[in-house]
Length: 554
Picture (cartoon, rainbow, N blue to C red):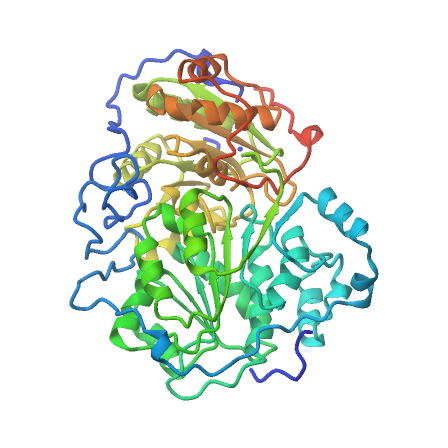
């Protein structure tokens, strides 16, 4: 059977043609989805913020008593016991030491460019600015990075800055608060890590008992660890220490790092609150704050934790918020915690997907999914390179386990990942998937972002997500770095409210629209020119309409 397979002014101090034509009847037991489920929400948080307007369409019905004290699906303790919760610091009563945060000096080439040239560059790269921002740099030579940073950039093989870096670096180094809206994989991590290093190296060294100078909050442990890899690559030569704190791993080593003192802390909200409540660390020295994938953190119900943490950080800090979408919840968070911020949008303002991905939507019934999945996997296994990797996205943890067992029963080498897996189990699963020993990964949305694995050729949405931006994040696991990929989605009548947005996404990417889907979109209220509600979902992997991969011959 086939297996598929400077700013710094001194030296540093530290993946078938449409299956909807097939009419199969499911003879075995089907998976009941009951909407978006009673016990777990789609993002695996048992303790999602379920107090009313933040409840997501009936998600998370088990823990509906406020903030919840149990652990969420990512191993982060909710920590909302009133007896242990942190008290917001009254900063007006504090005597705050002044600090410097503007380290940007434009390169002479940047200064020479006219406003027309700057605007032409921004328009050609779909960079939109809301606020007063410095002119973008266009190559690394214009960054005026010190030698120790430039050496690392060259050793990593970077040729030129991405759009978010070209505009984001001057803005971040100017010390201004900013919101960056760009798709996952567009270079955001480097856009804030390098300015963080510059910021840190221009502050007073840490003293015993001091907390970090820079804090990066991320929604999942996988993304946090990916951020740490970048911080390690560029922090080593600059003597900037970091640690990564997240749930699902022993607290001891993380606590020791915090107690010894580190300049950068990369954290998931729940575990960080654990350490703050215990006094293991504090955020009173934090002057550089990053909220990465803010939309994802809010979708996962982390807003109360984020607000709690921000109450521990001095208000005159520099704050950088990064997001792939711009829903009203993210906008409200920015208005509450970022005074006088500049917003950068990269890409089209229309909800859009990577044009290098062939998108196939199968309109079917819920009880047809299991048979269709097995048929689809058989087709893939018989016709595609055995080393090609596949991710199958489903909504709940229990269904992840059920589908994985079913796939293995049919002889496919599959592993699974969801929020109840320990860190050791997650690491093992990712190793098996990365090295190709298991070429099928069944996962919840825990793998929708922050997962960068080479060779993923197919993405299958067994359960269509609750929002089209999550769909785009899921399929974005393939077609990375200008490669091509194919995505499949099983779309049922239960998903009809998403039909309009999905049709817009497909048409924007010049994809063939299933007539059944188009009819469903019309019956659900019509469709039109894209979903702008998200105010800037980016398509920064924009390969152009001519780059759409050809359909495979089966």
